[in-house]
Length: 408
Image (cartoon, rainbow, N blue to C red; front, side):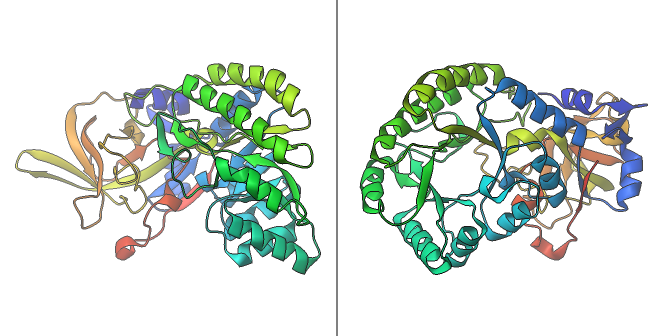
């Protein structure tokens, strides 16, 4: 997608980008300082509604909080989704403060500490165990607390998903238990006093290929239906993961959601209904729900020319924007969409590098981008910043202030 397509999604007023209907300059004055992250609740609501309309009614929607754990966003989404997935003790506390009931919170991720597991069992959330060691700790916590732990087994599938930005299944993985050992584990813990409700399979993230996601879901259902034969009670929880991607660069095309949803309808009405009639299918989405609703705003503080190359220096940088700087998993660095936000409708007139305020050549936000003339105090906006922005960046690097976040 092009920067102008993103400008159109947010809208403009007299050429100035809007966020939540508010002109960018006014929002910057309201925040009081730059840089900052801003999230448009109207775009967020529209994305949730679009997903809801596409998914089969029987499928529940879970928000993967790791994408953006800002409390205001969690509170907002808690009233619009069915479940919340967390990946740390702090995220768990944030989820438990939301309107989502504790039994609809799931705790996934490798390396849960014994204290976090005890906290989760005490809270009554679903613990998605990633190893026999975690399962031992869950059983022990349940015994000590006099509670029956609610458990789902996270499975490392025997297949990989092509086209994912990050592969999280197939081959050796730190995530989940290898599918081939799960039957033995289930037999070993059959009488351990846990409430085994089902399975979680998450094979990969940031995938823009609808048919690939649909095929992964088909293979997941087939895998889990085989594992279900080793469970002493009906499977009630079937977390199919997510992995729905969003377009970050001009060459990326948006995911065909209707193709994924159509295949999921067939799965829900066919194999899942036939083989696991008590199972509630869950789609777990983070980036796909929040990623496109957010922007990062940073102010031009210098403009310089070095041997014929023009540099726009801003007061933000890779300490808030590790992904946009190309240092968060990109094999080949590509620019994220960015514009001069206070003149978002203007045509490009020059080619510049947009760089941050850090003392490292890695602090590059835009490499050879076409922009309108950007002068001092202009506001540079980077799109696709609703997910894995602030919390996925090295905010302490060089001691600059942490930026504000606002939900508009």
